[in-house]
Amino acid sequence: MVRDFSQSNSIINQFVAEIRNVEIQTDRLRFRRNLERIGEMMAYEISKILDYEMFEVETPLGMAQVDLPVEIPILGTIMRAGLPMHQGFLNVFDTAENAFISAYRRHHKDGSFDINVEYVSCPPLDGKILILIDPMLATGASIVATLKHLEEFGEPKQIYIAAAIAAVDGIEYVKRRLPNVKIWVGAVDEELTAKSYIVPGLGDAGDLAFGEKSND
Image (cartoon, rainbow, N blue to C red; front, side):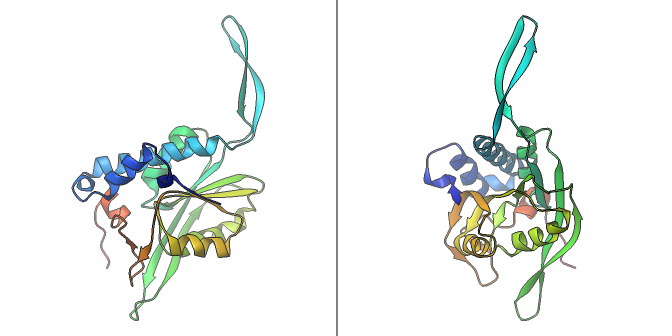
């Protein structure tokens, strides 16, 4: 299943447009906040399909009945670019447990690359709902490699992938490798460059959020 928010009218379209806009995206604070707001909106939408149960809440004047989520998802994020969007999810699922993964492309002289995972911190995943957050789903290789590393922490009962922008090729790659995963994305772009960057995309989300990094 792929939920593409750009296929319907919502305020998410404005936030996606602003993170793409070369004039607006130079404001790092606004760029981070827009990613955060996309995360908040996606978290709200995902909350609608969770399992709920009736609970009683005591008020100063009596008892109120309300449907509450049976469980809160575990939030996993690929650093560093995923951190602002992760915060948006955490603003909604504010009692969630969290996982953090350092995964990046290691390029070779022939132009190819592999995914290097250096750091993983994760709670037990058996039988849990996992939301894996990465603002840019380009080739899908980082997502697949990350989930491979998370296998040692258990088998989630459901995995959601949340991205601000995704490429068609990346979505198809993830669907082939992980057919039971559900993908939520702000917009889908058709093209990847020879270096596997999304076009039109938005550039490097990590650099735009936190400043340029050294490639040394």
